[in-house]
Image 1: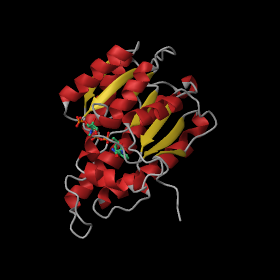
Image 2 (image 1 turned 90 degrees about the vertical axis):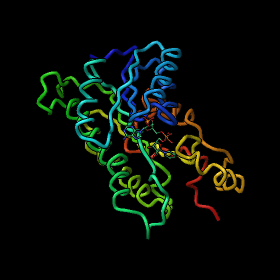
Image 3 (image 1 turned 60 degrees about the horizontal axis):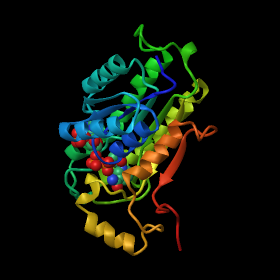
Length: 268
Ligand code: NAP
């Protein structure tokens, strides 16, 4: 059952980077956090320790590949068994292609790998959580529709790559463009059920994902590619997600919230 003092958020890909930033900010604000990770147990333990230090809620780490249907199902069972509920789902886990290759060279294998994790995973993880919330998954422990409390929320962590075409990682751009529509679809479907859905759209953010292109992006940011002339940080996204989960955007759903230092602004 939900505890209003310590609502439970499941954050996928919370062992490192933006997901860790979100988990930490939620911990500081009193949330209990289910910390999902793919394989980096040590990093997940670090996030767990940092959340425990920072917060008053409960915290636990759960290994699961969000691109794998069996793992998703096990993840939800384990989180529900541990916390008794989920009040918010933050679909953050994502990968870039293992190799940045021009779209004339990139492989179908890489396309499927990226789409499975970045799009199919969050799409169907959301479906499974929603079926529990709506009481339509046949599980007697699910929360019946009549018991739905306003306040449940879903966040998709998208990317400026939903709009900006990077021909060296086409599969990533396609996955994030698809995720943008997934957020709109779920927002439309769930609005009348009192469940709000958002896409948070980070720009160039300093994490392991961008460490290999740091020098390139340092130069571009210096030249004004990002109007605010700095890298984004996991804490930037963490604060944004916390505001969403706190209910500060009360009359919004399906919104795309940019956190990119103005990158998306058309300029002349
Ligand atoms: P990151 O530093 O590479 O961290 C990725 C996180 O996702 C890790 O916790 C990793 O777990 C987890 N993960 C990877 N594959 C997974 C899977 N199959 N199942 C479950 N978890 C998985 O990446 P990031 O930069 O923080 O990116 C987080 C999200 O923000 C992604 O969706 C990314 O597309 C998006 N984003 C990033 C940027 C940027 O500039 N960094 C910009 C826009 C959007 P392990 O530690 O176990 O590997």
